[in-house]
Image 1 (cartoon, protein in one colour):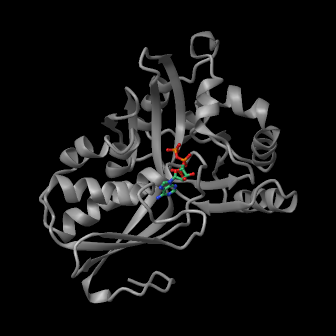
Image 2 (image 1 turned 135 degrees about the horizontal axis):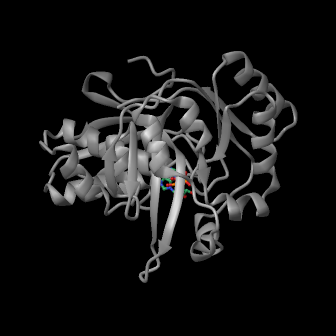
Length: 299
Ligand code: ATP
């Protein structure tokens, strides 16, 4: 496979996996549980924006993770390393593995970049070491790494409940242009949830209605119901998120929303020309440092 990157692995013995980012078409928080976790109800959707992971066997035992980003070391804090260690220990894997990670997904952005890399490790090592895990078995193990990992293992369109790990597969969301813009700010997920007053929210997105719209193949109905309760915290604290949404709407987006705990904003467009005009507007006004024009990614 041509990746356009230089990888020093021997291609013959290398497995390549794409790790797709997600957006939340809808994100509702039902309540804060006594253990501090939040019970959520979300519509998850993978987008055609991905990291690339290359897996190579090593003669020596042990896990080696490399990345192409100085700010993201391949040490034991990297979710790629954590997933590889969990699998090595669970399946008593004696051989060593090298995993090279190329990041494209914006980091700390609300796009599950780390979780999807971990999910790709489950797929890659399952194949490389012939572990014979079903997707459901991968999910049972994957949730130990993070609540979004099971969804990332499955991908596509899904309803996620519980802390995000209870999944119901949905039909693919109808195709469209998706514009993704990540402003140059860092938003801590912890800050967002700590400042969310889940019990006092007076407006909740219509997740059941969105599910019905997806099942009916009604993209307008999906766009109309896009909503994310975490915007109540972030848009107030970081006005640039609201400005990006406005720029997308002004250029013809069917709707625009912050993904996850932000700060990434995505917009849905029926026309490529309008999506490109929004891209230019956001880039020209310097509202976002990372902008991508893509579509949905199915399973
Ligand atoms: P979510 O949508 O699940 O909240 P996110 O997009 O907000 O995820 P990530 O990109 O997954 O956030 O990263 C959050 C933090 O996790 C990063 O700041 C980084 O320090 C750490 N991290 C560990 N492993 C990875 C990885 N493989 N890719 C990105 N971040 C990672």
